[in-house]
Length: 405
Image (cartoon, rainbow, N blue to C red):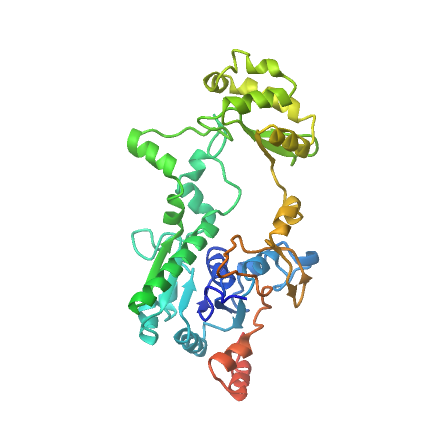
């Protein structure tokens, strides 16, 4: 196999919850040795929340943790002890990248801030992720992914007409910031390769999410206009929406007509060719003006049919259509399986479970999920011996003194 893109790169990972672990997951996927620092005294929330394998709770059985820690190592270390901080510093001195997503200033108070760490390793790259950044008047506020969504204006555009702002359903600020952090770290590695210098990357969830709102921001910047919430509808296309199908409450299909030819094809498939010449729907302007009536007619047709039947009929006619996917749909999807996106690696406690894998393929440096997520503290002794060079006696003493908990 070709050399992995980040082979030989070591990452000391102080992250927890979602944003930070998602950042370091990308590095593990690309071949970096990611060593996650954990402690029983302050367990990561992702080890404590459902879903659990076989619905049996346990720190090594949480699907959330096991998804976002694939390919990583786990070093159990009490950072509340001076000895724990000293071990962390020794590991950082032998690392290329440090990632942390504590609240602003927390890592500095622990004695592991960038100004301290660059004295240990001048070319160190550090990624600090928090809600509002390490500077500024709001730096001390606690920041979580769910709060960043309305703060970035996304909730103001999410929801249905004549109804208030809506949640988008996930903590979107977290994985988004994680991806930004991983990309920034790759850019910093290229910079270090050219200059020999390290860098501190200060990444705010709020700012990273705000840049995904170009239409809303530009509409106000250019026109002082607040875009209207409009559900699944589009400003230019009609029909454009999600329609209930036959079956339970989760069975829906999305349909979008981007041209007159597609609209006419939809009418033919529905068995209502007369709608194509109906003056209420004769062109996109008319369809937008009568969108409620239009959607009611389409819903009447889709509700009597299976979502996959609707999808196949419309796609065959050249109309964009696809079902809204459930978790089960995704976990059993033949396309995702054929591309190797769904992976099952042997886990020491829960065996093989389906996990989302790597969402890209590179011909020159193919990546793979190399291992399941680690048990808590699984690699503690290995890291201390093999990387830091501690003797068996020294490691045992650290265990006895409760530093490795």
